[in-house]
Image 1 (tube, one colour):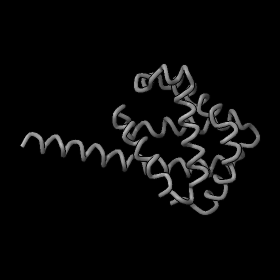
Image 2 (tube, helix red, strand yellow; image 1 turned 180 degrees about the vertical axis):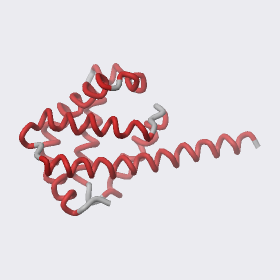
Image 3 (cartoon, rainbow, N blue to C red; image 1 turned 30 degrees about the vertical axis):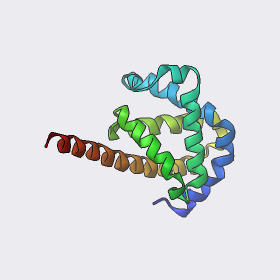
Length: 153
């Protein structure tokens, strides 16, 4: 659970994320691929080149900011993303890499608007969201392993 202060701050950033979201996510991928080139193979480079991946992520980040106080509204988005993460073999250890890259990109693009208070709120909010994904993806991996065992019986 995120604190009420974090909810208020993150929700207040939704308009700027709607406006600058794709710049932020494009920058995030640049940072992430530069600092962690081993992750690159898990991503569609054509979706990077045509901007569709950063656009999808920008929409997801904006949706989270807008609905942080109503996470059930994000269930279908979380399901879709979690299944995609399982397909591309995302691991729990990769979430801090993404978070670090996203937060740095926010600082780079938002400049002075990325105050300490805003960055602390987004750090907390990202941590909570990453736990949601890690837990859901764990369940999906477990379910698929169960299915494989059932098929062998």
